[in-house]
Amino acid sequence: MIRLERLTKLYGATAVVDDVSLEVAEGALLAIVGGSGSGKSTLLRMVNRLVEPSGGRVFLAGEDTAAIEPHLLRRRIGYVLQNHGLFPHRTVAENVATTPRLLGWDKARIAARVDELLALFGLDPAIYGRRRPHELSGGEQQRVGVARALAAEPRVLLMDEPFGALDPVVRAKAQADLAAVRRRLGVTVMLVTHDMEEAARLGDVIAVLERGRLLQSDAPAEIIGRPATPFVSGLVSDAERPFRLLALRPVTAVLEPGTTEGPPIAADADLRQALAALIWSGRSAAPVAGPDGAELGVVRLARLLEAGADDAA
Ligand SMILES: Nc1ncnc2c1ncn2[C@@H]1O[C@H](COP(=O)(O)OP(=O)(O)OP(=O)(O)O)[C@@H](O)[C@H]1O
Ligand SMILES: [Mg+2]
Image (cartoon, rainbow, N blue to C red; front, side):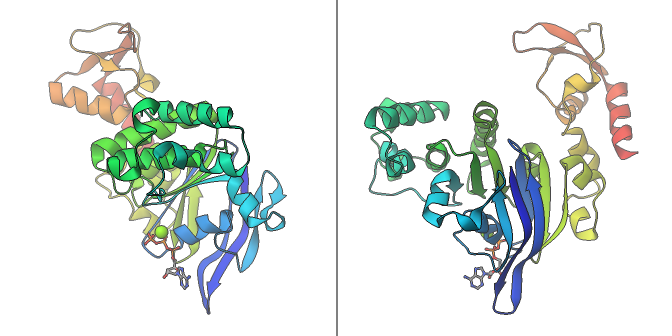
């Protein structure tokens, strides 16, 4: 669990982070959104003490980080920079091994961990381990950056716009990778993003910063459905709002018993995707199928529209 208590950073007379208090539950992902210069990176960097706070405290699992040597603290916290920050002259395997080496893990354990992580991110260790960062695509570099941050099994992962530079397809893959890794490793994440859609997809909680101040921190459905200020409201257009809310719920939430004709909708689709599929195929109902192809029930357009109206209520 991460707790920020009245965290403040002053540069001269300006508070670029201004009295921010927040909690991130064990294993949860906090998405931090806000405009350029709103203090997102500074907030993140105070958690691993790359920036020293001017006021306030940070607790990791109840331990005050002010009492931990900064370089030791940083070995315990994974940190993914926007531009991946890989060491250009080291191989992929050496990059991923950075923190385990500093911690003095033995060679066999390091090698096993590197292979495990590269495989987890879809990079064949035999092929990619020996390459240097410039021999990778941007998306591959980004995945190595995340793998490196996770190498020493940190309980906490800080990610500063990790997917910002990726094209939409690679970005979706990287987001899915992160979700899978979180399920598997149970790491607690603070992730900075400019993209509200990404924040809503990945975040258990979204924190909105403006000029260093925390405007609202809440579950995505609250941020989108009940914005606390005009600034928060402006993060999603009114025309998009109902669709963003539908996207937060799985199609299984409106599953009805029965069967119907036509191509199925996957059980891991969200309500927005189900609505799009029905509109696109001109149907008023579709079967829903699990990963093995077995039909689980039916989704009906009328029920979907009711769900959208419930969100708006
Ligand atoms: N070392 C520094 N000295 C003085 N001012 C700084 C310093 N570092 C950051 N700032 C200022 O603090 C403010 C917040 O910066 P920060 O990098 O946290 O913003 P951000 O929300 O991450 O922005 P972006 O989305 O553009 O990355 C900015 O106005 C920036 O100019
Ligand atoms: Mg930043």
